Image (tube, rainbow, N blue to C red; front, side, top):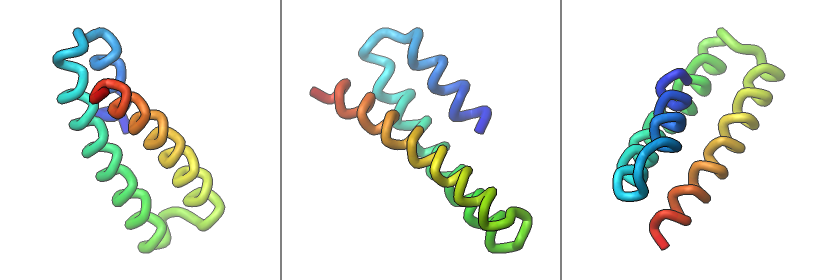
Length: 74
């Protein structure tokens, strides 16, 4: 999660040319976070309520990140 946040802050201060590469790396890290949270649920380290809350927040960040990436590609 810290890598995702760090990447977002880094991208916000970069010129447009560098932003896209950084945001694509952040997207990959977010996908790893999704997988980690799912695995935590599967091994019962998270109950369903906490999992659903985390998953919802991760999905929202993913939508926002996807919009940012799309806007840079235009």
